[in-house]
Structures are given as C-alpha cells and as structure tokens.
Amino acid sequence: MAIKSLPNGPSAVILSPQTKQYTVRYGQNIPPINCTTNCRPECIYTWFGPHVLSGTKNVLSFENIQKNQRGDYNCKAINEVGSMQSAAINVNVQYEPIVNKVTINGTNFTVSENTRVILFCNFEGNPVPTITWTKNNIILGEDVENSGRSFYTINAVRCKDTGNYSCVANNSLGMSSAQQSLFVTCFPRLNVFKQQPPKIAGLLIGEPLNLTVHIIAYPKLLKVNWTFQSSSTLDDERSHNYTTSLTSDLFTHVAYFYKYHLKKDDFGNYTLAIQNAIGGIVVHFYVDRAGLPATPTDLLVICETSPMVVLWKPGFNGGTPQWFTVIWKDMKTNTSIVKSSIPDSDNGQYVKVTTSSLIDGTTYFIYVEAKEFIKSENVIAVGVGAGIGTSLMILTLAVIVVFIVKRHRHRRNKDINKQHIDDQATYANQSF
Image 1: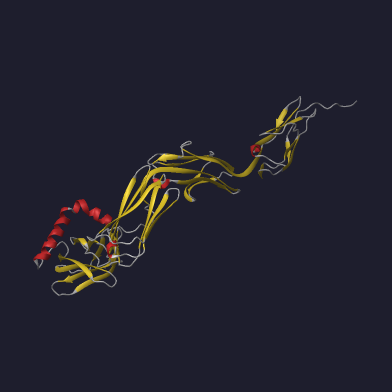
Image 2 (image 1 turned 60 degrees about the horizontal axis):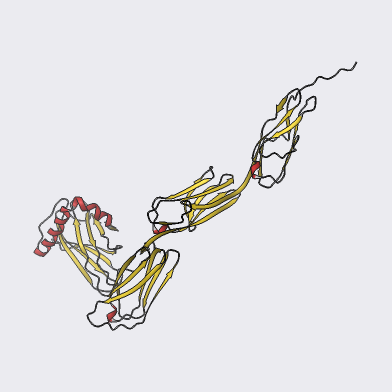
C-alpha cells in the first residue's frame, strides 16, 4: 500500500545568489535572483519591491536598471498550507547628479538694493551630492543636503551682488549645475574692488594724463560727462588733444580720460558726472603740477607710557611716492635717534611709529620729514619732554606752543579719540 505524502507549507525561502546588498549604476544589469523553497503542493512566488515588473515569478531580473528601482526586495512563497517570506535584499542604484533650475525669490530676478534674496534649487543624485553655490564661477559656500533642496540667502543685496549664480552638485559619478542671473538696481558708485586714480595727482608739463575710473551701476549708464576747471587765472589755452571713452559690462563700467601732453593751463579740477535711471554721482580729480611733498599734519606724540608713540597724517606727495624720516634730537647732548624709509599710508590715514630707545628725564626735539626720491623736504617739528609719565619745559616759545597744543588736544580727546586714531593708524613696522 503506497504512503501518500501530506501537504506542507514552505519551510524556508532561499534566494540564490545569497547576496544581501547590490550596488549598481543606473542603466546597468543585475544577474537574475532565483527564489526557491520546499512545499507541497507547489508554491506560488511573488516578489515585492519598488517597480517589480508584472509577470515576475520566482526569478527576479534587473536589466537596464532604473533610478526608481532603488530599494528593498523580498520574495514570498505561498500555497494552501501556508506562506513565508525571504530575507530582504537591498538594491542601491547610483547615478550622477541632476540639478533643476535655480530660482531667485520665486521668479523675480531683478531686485532693488537692500532686498533680501533667497536662491533655491532642487537636485537629486546617489551618492548624495555636495552642493556648491557660486557667483561668476567663484565659490560662495558649500552645502551637504539629503533633502534634495538647497538655499543660499543674501540678507541685503548690494550692487556688487549682481551676477550669475549657479547651484553645482557633485558626487563620485559626476557633476551637474544650473545657473540664473541676478540683477540689482543701483545708482552709480566707484568700484571699491578696482584701483582708482588718486584724488590728487602731481604731474609735470609734457606728461600724459590718464584717468581710468571704475564704476558699478545697473541699469546702464545714461550720462557720462567730463568737465574741467583750470587752476590758472589765465584764459584756458589748452589744445583739444584729449580723448574720452566708456566700456561697459553687465554692471561694471570704465570711464577713460586721456590727455597726451599737459600744458601749464591743464592743471586743475577734472570732474566726472555719471548717471543712470536710479541716480548719479560726481567725482572730482585734482591734477596739480608736480613739486615738493606737502608738510605732514596732525602730529601727535604720546609719551605717558613706554614706548613713545609718534603719529601724523601725510600730506600730498607732490606727484611721486614719498617716504618719512622721524628724528628724536636730544636737546642736551645734541645727538639724535633717526629712523628713515618709513612708507606712506593709504588714503591719508595716520602713520604710526614707536620707540623704546629714549632716555627717561631727557628733553627731545622731534622732527617728521616728508621726502621724495630726489627732491627737497618739508618738515613738521614738535618739542617734547620725553620720559615715562613726565613732560619737561620746552626751550623756545614756538616749540612750546606746538607742544602744548598737541598735548592739550591729545589729553582732551584721549578717551574719545584714541581708539579712532588707532583704527586709522598705519603701522610702519618701525619699533626699536
């Protein structure tokens, strides 16, 4: 008598190969994964996971795998007796980044100055991309996001923020970016990131005059006008051998004035008037005949604590670079301490020099000399009773007056202006 086998449900669901993790690049293939078990009657197999193709039975195939097939999969075996699921496998589909368009405040790409601007982009990619925001190909900042969204905020835009902004996504498989232009409306102003002509220049007769002025403005310039007022009382006998021109980019502009040979009546005030639809500015440049450097002014001496501090404001350099010399002359021994080759400061800021080499209880006469390379000098002098916490009698009335005025101003403004002076001071790196 034959023994009839009893029905049984699946005892174990086995996947072959037994790999638990598959990492594959978008568009590639994964070898077939076979799902088996022992069951009576024969089991029916169903695969569960993202976008399983219809009609799939016990063999799961991935050909030309898509990004939306990334995720967990398992196989379920079922018959009339029971059912069982396999262990899960994970399929990691990797692909290079994709960046959607950049938006600025929604769709408003032209804004006024001081507006708060939010730049936004959507992106995707696996591995998760690193997001970099750039302006005109210069990196502004980086952002590691897994939400698929990135923001870059400018709390109060300025004219200089006009430019092309990009959201750039990078991962190990590639790079993608999207770009949008931001336009900030603003009245003309000097471009502080470019070298401008000096407000006062010294030139010789026969030399050329070249004024190259860098401007920021948006929208485009409507007026660029040069005018001249001679410093001479004589009639203007200048010839018309000069040229003016203008070059413009998106929001940067350059105004040029060039005169080939200066004559005696070409020295004076050159004025540039610039205007666009938002507003305008007027810029003055004074061209003087080259000569001696001007006398330094606002000489201050601080000797209440060691080291002694000497500060002054440079004057007009006479048309060529100037250097300074400080002399501490001992009024008793007639010997001097000299420090030379002290460089000029920028934009008329204070020059500052210190010394710890003075003798306590000694009266010094202090000179500050401005020199050009081969020209004579102009000198400002002040007499000081040097010492730690002391001030001694000065020998001449003129020096006493200079000394008292300077010291009085220093004491009166000590608490109020000392920080202001320190902020403006340009250290000549001369401590000895």
